[in-house]
Image (cartoon, rainbow, N blue to C red; front, side, top):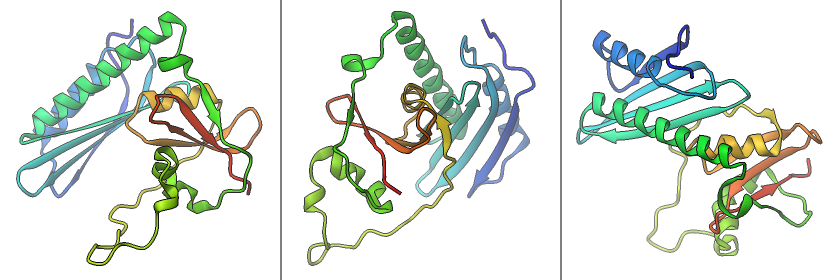
Length: 208
């Protein structure tokens, strides 16, 4: 058993909060003490954020062996409690995943993957994944009178990795992401894996 994670590169950064040495040490101690049988943690990023109304948010991203990324976040009224709760979420998620591995089957109806009918999808397809999943894409349009038009409030980079489909499914199971964009290691195609409401997975392969 991997009882302790040693020599892990841990980065602690703050948003709207100054990181104290005590906060940094607490985050390091919690990540290093995370007991995982699998996978081996290579790098960890801890992002601490304080929002109005005493909202203390802790996000932890673990980059592990075998192209596995584990991430979780929690929000409480105390930053130390948020860090502890996020670590607990990761530990529960890993125990759940380990149980599934031991049973040698994937979650929910054998994790059937539904391939959409062959078509050409524009880059904007990502923005309508929720609509595809709920069957409401055709209702998307201009906002009704009196409604505010949606705006982009957060932008982040996305690293596209070569993965097999089962690896992409594991990546999604171990995170809170609504979809995973990856380069299919089997056919070199750009693919988008997303979770359907019925518990299965869907795959979009855009025609570039």
